[in-house]
Length: 383
Image (cartoon, rainbow, N blue to C red; front, side, top):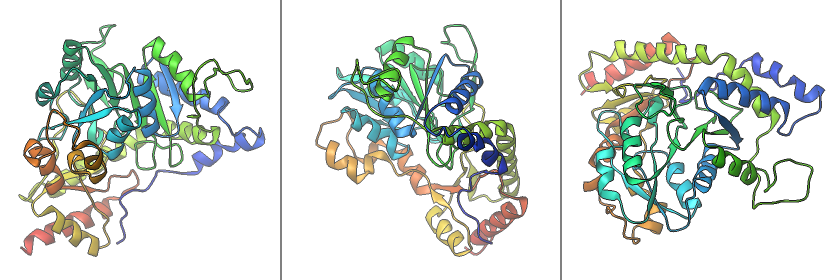
């Protein structure tokens, strides 16, 4: 078999949805974008939402409107995709890396306490691998230390947390990305839904931040067609073609989620008797929309090499931020509150050394799951 790591769940629905863009000759951000925004606001139960070209730029915009300035420090998970850290650098601030837990590699708020300095202005929790961080702990920490919360929910669109204690309106059930000051999602091709390969979303319940975003993302003006620009701004818009794809994807969101959970359950059953392998635990209070089939495995990198020879495309877990060559060049000599030594990030390193991402795209078949599971069993039985 040939089994790729990702395969976007695109059908004729997406083609049908974007026909209007051609018949009406409207391709820039317009009616489709407005419709898409209305639908995601209702789904996420959030007051304001705007589109962005991708989640990296969405995080950058979020940091800017949250008041993060050059020289400020932002605490961020050490175990995440590179963009979480580089969006902070793009805003001129300093990413300060925080250790994660060993069960599911969500940020460990207890370790964040030691990272605080007079320059700390925000914390960026990352909802990793399709589940929530403990948003109660994040909120309590941020309130106590007067920090802004900029949520990286790139991998957690549609994920819920039950038992939230800090909602202004008393809601106990909240969506990942909506519990802080501002949050971002990704619609890249491998995410729960896509807007055609690239795309992002920024959400907030803060009126002032929303007003600032409108200027920042649209060349310093509220509407196109005018050449008077009251504020500094840039181009962070999306197209109606992309929004149309997003609308079609939203219609089958339930199907996508159900398929991903089916895949997770099937792998759980087929791998349960392999003592060298275990699936990640879901954070208490969080729902789960698997981003990948994430397993911890003995001899993980050897296993991945073997699977590659069998036509299966696995991926490693994230490479720790404190080990990233590009970030080390820029920030190692800065004098962060925590050094870049592995000893400060044992769990983050453990994740990279022992983690394997197997496919979890919605069209993955039971036959493909069985094939992958059998190959994993054969790898360990030969040891």
